[in-house]
Length: 400
Image 1 (cartoon, helix red, strand yellow):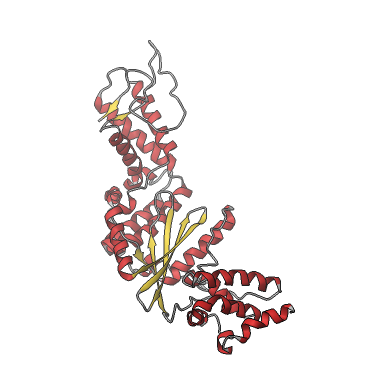
Image 2 (spheres, one colour):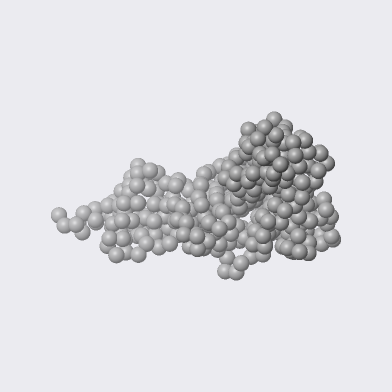
């Protein structure tokens, strides 16, 4: 028996309409084949029906034997030089068609990591969700997929509110897809390897729009009246900004500077002078840390955070965020320095408060040892976590 005869065998045992089915009808055809679903896939391979084979291979809901046969069949077809078509739609699952798509956005954390969620919504009430985790300067980090009913999606969002204080915010589908596409381009610049699953989930992630869509905040028509920048430190009380902190090295440098200046005051410094030193050092740390490039990055992340705050707290509070973002970009080294934007200065205030909380309500400052009749010896320059025991002399100052 020749190979062609072998390939012809499965063809003769199926209705020609099942053999010639397209990608959209592949799932229904597999359902009709029942226990013979693997034989149907073999028949498609024999008939060079690459569209149907590719559709089943990428369909997570297809029966295991059929999907395994389809994946094997793709290799056979490729070896024969048959072009495998790209899939741009979600297959129907036993007649359960896709009625639309929804998208949500989880705002970036302090490291610039955000999550774009895109879901294919089926008539049955189920969602096929794909979470794209993206990071500034890196690109697309990871893809996660799962299925949920609409009630499960709602429960998941409610659990997120209880855990972190906010839920994923609904965003336009075109913007979500454009955001994922932009992240993929960033991978090429950063050299980061693209995650697995892009082909498998291509039908949900979809093609990016032809033209970059406007940011959801630009669509929101926020009030433009001036917002009180002087009260902007209160933004750190919003849950979306809870994890926004300066880098550990910058905090350590601040602590060392405070210790050096307090050490120069002698063994029993006046509390008012200590407070003034701390305030001045925070000012200096703020100006050093928030260089122009970082300020632009922070402002862009704030715009993304405003999406969540708009959904959770309304237009007025989102407008406050955007006003502070504009002030962050406008800050200069001489006029309107970063320290004059309370939101930026509060990064270091919050960092010190967190360190103090971890130390039982007190903060250890490394105070260099004062030699008799001389200036304090140089403070250690190594970086790392600060603990209540990180003092270089018994005279270390404990801040309240």
